[in-house]
Amino acid sequence: MTPQNQGIAGVTIAQTVLGTLGLCVLQAAASPLSIAFYRCAIAALGLGLYAALRGDLAGLLRLPARVLLLAVLSGFLMVGNWVLFFEAIRRSGISVATIVFHVQPFLMVLISAILFRERVRAVTFLWFGLALIGLAFATGIIDLTGVTGGGLAIDGIGIAAAVAAAFLYALVTIIAKRLPRSGGLRLTLIQCLCGAIVLAPWLSLTPAEVTGEQWKWFAIIGLVHTGAVYILLYNALPKLPTAMAAVFLFLYPVSAIIVDATWFRQPISLVQIAGFLCVLLASLGTTLKWGDRKAG
Image (cartoon, rainbow, N blue to C red):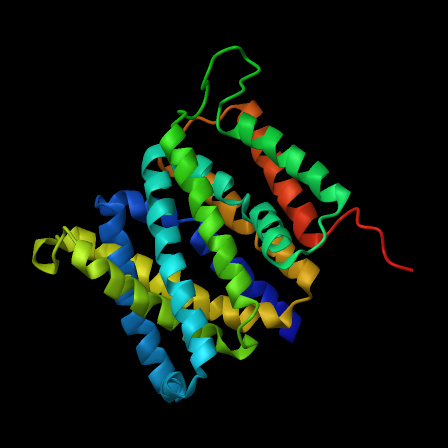
């Protein structure tokens, strides 16, 4: 198998598995804070063991102070992103929370424009407009059938939580771009360690109170959706061209919608499906910079 095919296989598996995250979050039947804590703690153990076996663990102690500070900052932001996203799933359902979360590329463009004075091209606003229309349809705010919320239920707090989660993840992505590319595994490990430390004082569900069923779902979220998926992505993405990688990353929301529709029998109207497609198309267009005029 060629390196590119290995990359395609790795990203496809990782993104498809990520689509089942919402299912595990709901099945765990715990608060978003508790789920985020156990995700961080279990993932940190798994990633720490993996890093130790590879001989990478000692590298954490040799990180430059600036890199370590940025990694810790991204850890605080990432744990906030996870808590908010889990709350969005709990309130709005898997499909709506996941698709709203994918406004992240637009938020990253806007944040970069404000913080780093990066130029925002006119076509980006067109993609942003398409995304907003798609969100209106996907969340049920606009229903062409005349029945408000004809498919999925509307929950303003859930939608706001998903947008806030996307905002924090956009900041994490911006920080990650300013860190060494070879430090993906270390960055995730630091993020999980930070999350476990930050969330521990707020934990309402102690380990003694966790049921056997909940431990199963926490373990899947920590070891599979965080540890295994991140390892797969960090190994696979460098083997793919940027444009191809961006396309395959959108298997995540597609997988999540399919899981929501099949496992929970969640009704989805044709208007909402059209909304999902608008958001995905707009996000893909922004990521791949479709419509930008090439210099020269």
